[in-house]
Amino acid sequence: MRVASEAEIREYMNERSKDTSTKSNGYTYARGNPRGYKISNGEICVLFPNGRKDCVNVETDGRNFEIITRDGGRSTFK
Image (cartoon, rainbow, N blue to C red; front, side, top):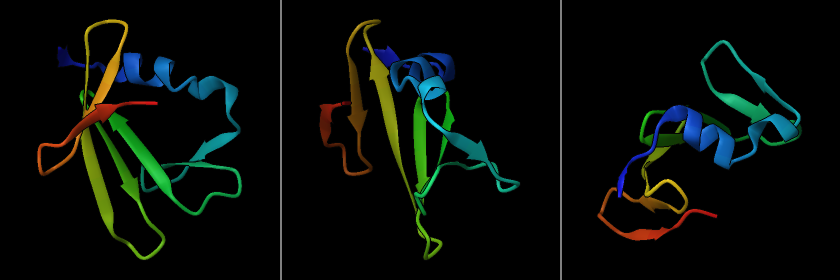
């Protein structure tokens, strides 16, 4: 596994098919969802309405994607 690029993550999430908008804080919000997300190389961060932020790392082998939490837990990215 290797660090997933921003483009790979966006493609995997099929972001273009979603009704989203990016706010001035740099986070993207799906219509009606109070949580925003920001994607960068190897990372997705979620911004919650209360201001809390949580990030996970994203790795891929080119076909499969895994998320790695702060405490090192791994799971399939669905």
